[in-house]
Image (cartoon, rainbow, N blue to C red; front, side):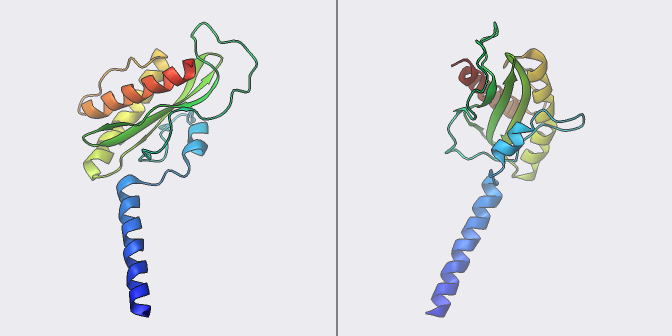
Length: 164
């Protein structure tokens, strides 16, 4: 009986570790999204690998009583839908203040190693482009076509949530 219990516990633990390695942990999503507009040198990315069960849309309630600015974006933190490509999921969150995008963060796949390498190079570039453009019109990063497309798709859904 003890061996069976130990074997079952070991199997479940192993399965949990494999899933955690595959999809990453996302317990710190909101905490990292709040700090998405980091000081110089920061990438602004969130903890890797989003959970597909996350619901897109507004993360925190609007605290400002101001009307919607000309940009049509409400103040707050908004999460886009997870966009999945051949190399894994990407989910973009934005922070809007005074009708402007002030922070952009993206959670992304970390395995295999090549995907992590591409995402770590492309996400900061895409983040900066989104902040500069104040829209989802970002250029494709060379060598990161799928990442760029998923980033733009998720960013567009976050902007749609900010307009709703």
